[in-house]
Amino acid sequence: MKIHMHKLCTSCLLLIILCCSNISHARPNVSIIINENTGEILYSENAHKEMYPASLTKMMTIYIAFDAIKKNIISFNTPLSISKKAANMLPTKIGLKSGRTISLKAAIMSLIVKSANDSSVVIAENIAGSEKNFSKIMNTKAKQLGLTNTNFTNASGWHHPEQKTTAYDMAKLAVALKRDFTTFYHLFAQDSFFYKNTMFRGQEKVMQHLDGAKGMKSGYTSKAGWNIVTTATRGDHNLVGVVLGSTSYQARDKKMIKLMNTQFAHLQNH
Image (cartoon, rainbow, N blue to C red; front, side, top):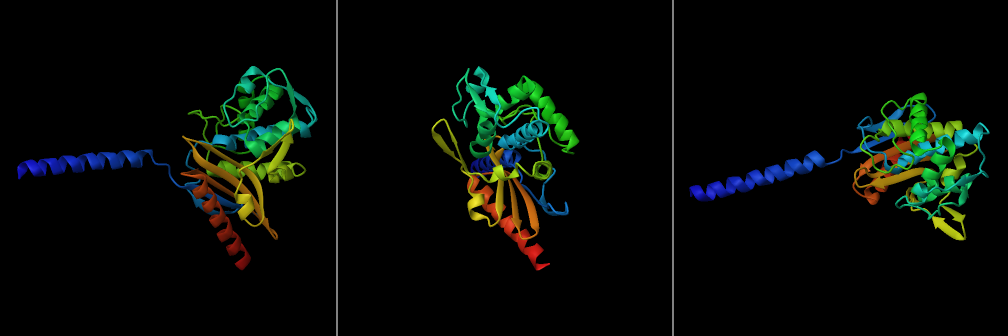
């Protein structure tokens, strides 16, 4: 009898250790919905929890590119040189070749539609000379925009342990992109673009199933989970939503659509 009890207790102990281990590595539910018109937080769940941004990082890369265009430092038609580093970036990418060029407009569209890592490095190197210098510009701009819990280490969102953000900061960045670049904002609604005789299509599903969705950015790494930032408009109401760390893109998209629909309904009823 004692032997059986010992075996049972050992099994229970192993089960407890296993469960605790799984819990410690689980990502929390992280999301936020902001009323863009008023700045009011309509829904918040761990919105200030530090998370990995994955390709949401490209929102800041695009912000800096738009800012350079607005200041006449560069233009959409400017040819950007493609380095070996950029060409050798791992997917997702559009297959840029070292020694050739790509227009800034095409590079930006590849970030929006295809989340291209190779184009991210091209933009960084051509604006700042190196991706390291570009990340410094990213962090300076983050401070100026009030992204107090965000740190960037690269232009693509490729995983780095020191590259962190929060749902609240990503919502603020989305608002800033729309506010500061109203003439460019429509580009985020594009779900395809043509480059070098190839049609590239995005995988954004929320825009297809959420009434009034205007797009923005999604991303994934194994460390970050499935992330998304969405902007949507219904009547006079403009909302920005962020979901971070989902276990699948289906769960991420379903949560975003549910949260947005719920908050739009509340606004319309009041």
